Length: 265
Image (cartoon, rainbow, N blue to C red; front, side, top):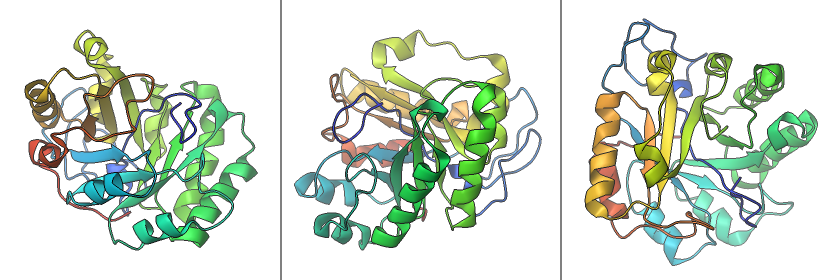
C-alpha cells in the first residue's frame, strides 16, 4: 500500500456513511450520504472528492487545500509520526477536512499499535478522521477491524475509511465506514467488474483511478460516479511507481465534476 516512504500503494476512500452516524446505511434505508436505495438497486448520490495528499508541506499542499469540498488524507511518516511536525501542524490548523493515515498489515498489526496511531493523530494534530490502510478483504478479519472502527468512533472520528483496495467480504459494509472497492489504473478500471450485491452499498464505497490519459477521460469518469451511486472518487494522470506524489493539472476541476461539497472530519 502506498505510504509516505513508498512501501507500496494505497487506494483512497472517504467515509460518507459515518459522518456522525451510528453505523452504515442498510439496504432500503437512508444514510448520511442522503441516499435511499432498495437492495440490488443504485440511487444517484453526490460523491465527494478525496485527495491522497502524499507529499510534504509546501506548494502542493497549498494547492490541495485550495479546493473546497476535498477531503485530504494526511500521512506524516507512515502514520502520524512520533513528534508534532510544524509544517503538518499548520496544515491541520487550516480548517480543511483532513483524515489521518494508519496501516494495519492486513489485520496482523496489533490493535494496540493502531490505536496508538489514532491517539497520536488526535493529540498531535487534532485529526480524528481516519484512513485505515492495508485492510484485509477476508471475513475472518472482521472482528479486528470492528474493534478499530469502534475505537476510532469512540474517540470522535466522524469520517472513517477502510481500504482493502478491492471488493472485500460483504461484512465490511456493516462496520460503519466507507470501503475502497477499486484502486488501479484507468486501463484496469475500464475492464473492472463488480459483484451485483455491491450495488446496495454503492454510496458507501470509493473508487480511485490513476494513469488516466487526459482531462476529458478524467471528467467523464468522475461524472459517471454520481449516477452509479458511488460515494467518493479521485482520478489522476500520474502513474506508477507513485501515482499520488503530485496533483493533476485539472485538480481544481475535479470537485466540480464530482459536484462535491465540504464536510468536516
